[in-house]
Length: 214
View 1 (tube, rainbow, N blue to C red):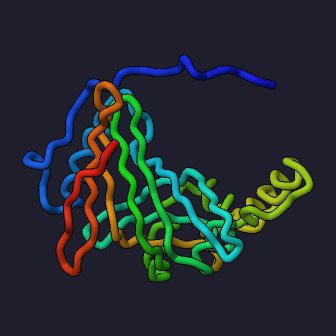
View 2 (cartoon, helix red, strand yellow):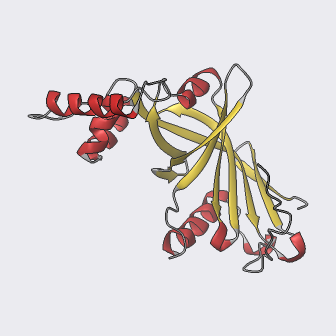
């Protein structure tokens, strides 16, 4: 199987990113860009982000998760701690998250370190989830090998029967992470592939701002 994609290209001309127009705090710029994406009709899930992890096997792995909150402390998401990403983060908390909004020609890459959220925070968020999602978290041993789709549906039916008359508890192996950023890169597509790339690097309590060649 083969397909030639060399002619797949477009010109990026929707914006610019100039040093004299950006704040000194990368979280302020993140919030501005996230708001644009969240309000854009062309963006379906502004909070979808790729997270890349590397465990002791030194094999990088990426997948899409959903950002659930952000603050000056960092970025939070929730998952099964026994999943591959959870195991990787236990072995190596350094990770990278990326947001790409093609219709806006914008991308943000954030490197940081992940720590587990307090159990109370994970319980509070879990209780806010739809009941079906709560049951699914109890039914699925994420990233484990299963025999069939039917097996998964049977597991869900078992959970529905088990908790039909009461509250669905948060599994011990399920919870949130806070990713504390150590660097940001903001990418704005530009004409002739001369894209704007602005990098913020943590320098003690401040941020060092540099332009990177495209």
